[in-house]
Image (cartoon, rainbow, N blue to C red; front, side, top):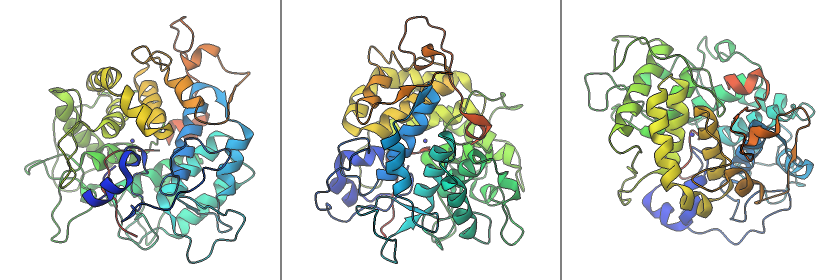
Length: 403
């Protein structure tokens, strides 16, 4: 799978906005130049998205049937604090984490999904899950930083992490509430503007405002899924339905109907950031493809993917590894070949941005879509990933909060 950044911050970080984690803190001014460490994918400043983009890259590679390079996995595990949490980026991972290290739920949840995909990495994934459980809010959800009010994006990416690690999110409770419990409260009622969509969280007056990024994330969260998914069963009813307390299935179906309507005319979503230029939002559109497919709305998902295939190549090249990973996961969701994305190989483009992975000996070589066989057999990594990213839901155009 996106919305948490002020217009001023967008200007400061430029292209990075397209590939930052769902709810990462944005800088108020450009950060000092940071040397990109060996093993990390991408050449851009990793201060705000290092763990996020590495995690999505490893997940995309495993989904394609590749075994990520040991140096890439080592870099990610090296970012983990002793308590199991991850921050967006630690320039000196050899130094113990202290109060100045801003660990967050989104980076940690993305890392869990990546580490689960590569086998848990000696308990690192489980340790991160334990930390996530320890900072769960009383309403059952999570905010970006521990103690922040719960929001749709953060709660949904943690749900995906729990599922990827083999933990049923419904069993993870604080004050008797699971992460599924707050989702209906963020669903915009059908009779209101943006009905069916999800808000990031209520505004200061308690009003729910439709947010496409939160909606895509919320579909996956309500369905108990994460960054990697396949087409689900079509909803029993179309459109926004239900009243009173919604089930999580109703939350997902209503949100899916909102996204399907949003991409019906143009095939894509548009940026709605305050003060930002009205323009196509490639990252949110990729997240919408995954969400729509997961909700069984395959026709709408394919429409949006077809638009991405024609228009998103330049965006991915400018944005880097997380963007390529988003497009690969979108291709996977609709059963398309990422080796031929309007004449470009998303696979080679992603793998060229860091240490070369290896094709898993147990995987079908055609899984990457690099051959012309057209079989499109994909490698699925464990039941956890299928049930449990984002972006990501997740990524581009997200309104990000100041630390």
